[in-house]
Image (tube, rainbow, N blue to C red; front, side, top):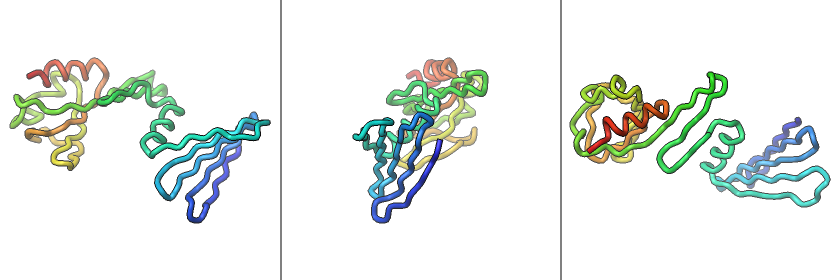
Length: 161
């Protein structure tokens, strides 16, 4: 499988892969921020095209590598086949009023559920890996990671009103 790249002045960068069967896949990263993908099947004269934004392109990349198994509006489940088919879920939650003013340590989140808060978004700023002393405020959104059953336990034991 051959990989070629070409800088196209004023347009962006083109990456082209030719498969062992002779099919061609070309990816253009344009100066405008879109990603264009063209496929040309061996023996055909007309390519197929798709135009994606960066989020869509990353999602496609994850699908092609087998990383994303399931995604919805608030969570993503990732499978790591090299680690005995480990499946990790990352889920977002908005903090309920009853835990405003409490710390991660007060709530004993990891001890009770096995899940871990890996980030909090507060006033459009991200706090990555908040310490146990982190105090929740009204309007905080959290990013929680764990196995599916740990996320469900977090939702039922910590997030209940």
